[in-house]
Image 1 (cartoon, helix red, strand yellow):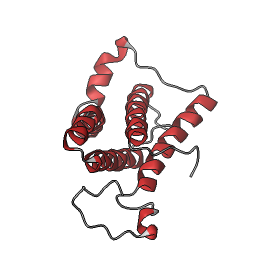
Image 2 (cartoon, helix red, strand yellow):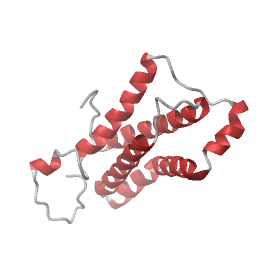
Image 3 (spheres, helix red, strand yellow):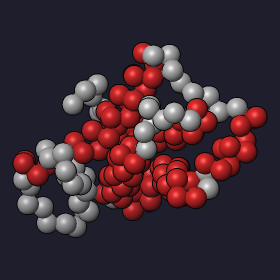
Image 4 (cartoon, rainbow, N blue to C red):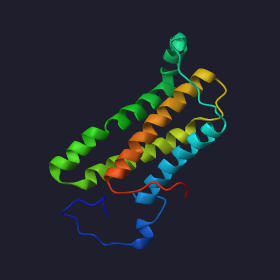
Length: 155
């Protein structure tokens, strides 16, 4: 329901609203559940990688090229949460925040499919991927919370 603007004519369809595909709450929830699952696995293995200052040259190389472009795109999108909140509030249009949340969920899912976050063998690259995933996860959970959508433990 939140994806529609105030002036939209809505033909509500339960099947569509509960779908895990497309612009739906369950799709966004699933992305957050997936992100939380990554960190449950990492915490269970006490296996969180850490970015260190002495790895700065390696980090720079990871953040350049195609992988770097994907990382930066996701980070920039995740960092726009406050802007999306402000736009939604200024226009009294929760659909702005809902659209942002969907786009962030979609970007995270693409990131998740393209990168082996947990299984990455390069420790520095793994630490970069984990850091980006963690920041995105936090922003996605905040966006969903603002929309009044909870994030279940499992789906």
